[in-house]
Structure formats: structure tokens, C-alpha cells
Image (cartoon, rainbow, N blue to C red; front, side):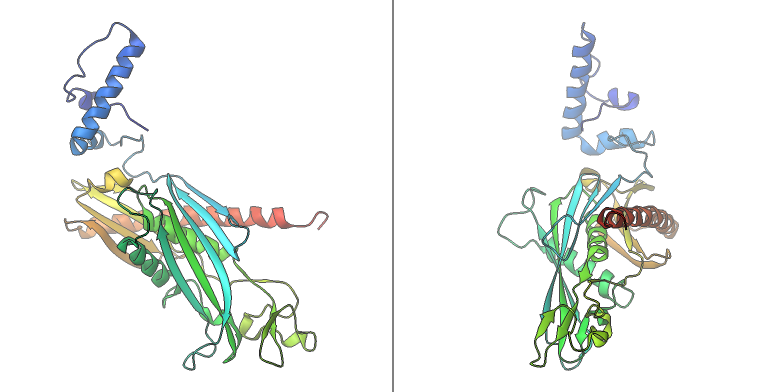
Length: 332
């Protein structure tokens, strides 16, 4: 959405001083001048707003964009979520396949994260080519979800130690890259995992995996917690609270929270701060900018990320409650 210049910025637009006899035409003329000024001088355009503590989209410097979380966005998936951070949109889907575990990890399943960047999401990406950003995004999300401090313990993906485990493919589709891509992708991945359920399965005498409880020994079904417990129902993954990422820009010493894609290009530095469900620091990444980030500025970004985590976690829990209520049978 185009923005009109604040008073200080309007004075800098070359033709903004011309008056039009008709009020509506005058406003339209000013808007065109502001748009032209923004295209020609994007940094000066932003600077005029930042000097007054606001941004062209109307947000304050410390105000993030709104988040929406839609669970179960893909009916055919074993778990899915569509997350939007402002216009930035990422769809995450989980699919489960059975595999034989390696000898060195007989009781541990696998999580394979991939990312695909739609050519429509950004003009910088070309269809049919794997963008380096996709590999970096997938690796970062995988590290944060399944690493030593991750939310998912892959041992619960074990069906039968040494015989069968689940391989959980977590696919990320970037539908719109309008800034804060890691923020949206990590939340979409975590939400899809919360939506994912492991089917009830059992191992036959021939060593095959079949869905449903073991008819002969249902009480022993689902060794390691990954087989569904033998009750015939699917099992939700046991997850820690979702990690949340907040990207902040640093512009002339000021912290700009959750910059959009146009603002990202203007920042002297950018940092993405990831915190866990307790507010503990999981990682700090510097995706862009050449300037160094002062320690006090970094502490400010961490505090902002902790506040964002509490807000987003509450939204995710509310979405899960709403989903359970919708799935509850009538009269139950």
C-alpha cells in the first residue's frame, strides 16, 4: 500500500508544493509525487518517516507485522499449516513414510526439511532453479527444530527399534517473500509439526508395517511411542513450545522490528533472533547488512524476540484449541 509523505518528507518531494484547485485531485497528485519520490530515493523516503518514529506502512519502528496461523491447510498431508507475517506467506506440510533405520541409530526416526521458493514470491527467483536461499532456509529450520536444542525428539518416530521408523518429510513452500522469511518459515514448520499426527501401526510377522493396532498384541503396539499406542488412534507428536524468530533491522542506530522486503534493503544491519518457549536464546543470525551490531542493540533485539515469542505462542495455542473444538464430535 502506497504511503503519503509525512510533513517533513513532503517538503523534500520536488513537485509536492504544487497546489491543485480540486481537493481530491490535489491528494492524488501528492500521492503520485510520494510514489515517485519513493522509487527514485527509497532511502531518503524511509529516512523522512523514520525521523518521526514511523514507517511508510504506518507501523512504529518497534511494531511487528500481524501474524495469522491456519492449521490443517492441506487436507492430504499428515500435518500442515499456512502462516502469514504481514504479506509474507509460507505453507508447511508434513508427510510420513516408513523406512528401515541405520544400524548406528536403530531407534531414531528422521526429519527431512526442504524448501521451495515460488517464482511468484520474489522477482529475484527463477522457476526451475533451486535458489541458494532455499537450501539455506531449509538447513536453518532443520537445525532449529531437530538440533540438540530443537523442539522435536526424533526417537518418538521409532516404530520398532532396528526394524522400522518414520521418516517425516517437512516441506516448506514460500508463497510470498515480503520480508522476515525465516520468521514465517520457522513458525509454519513448528505449527505443521503441532498439527501432525503419527498413524497407529504395527509390525507383522513378515516384518511389514501395517496401519492399525496389532490384532494379536495391541497392548504392545507402537514401541518407542511412535506406533500409536495400539489403540487404533493416531498420536500427536510430543513437542516443546515452538521456537520463534524475530528479524530486526538496524537503521542509523535505531532498531526497526520486522522490516518488510523494501525496508530490509535499507538497513545497515539485520539480525534474526531465535528464542525457545522459555525465552532462552537459541541462535542469532545476521542475514544482511555490513554494519556491526552493538551489544546493547543486540540485547534489545533479544528482548523484542522474547515478547514476540509469548505473543505468537499464545496465537498457536489458540489455533490448536479452535481446531480441537471443531474436530470434537457433537455431544462429546
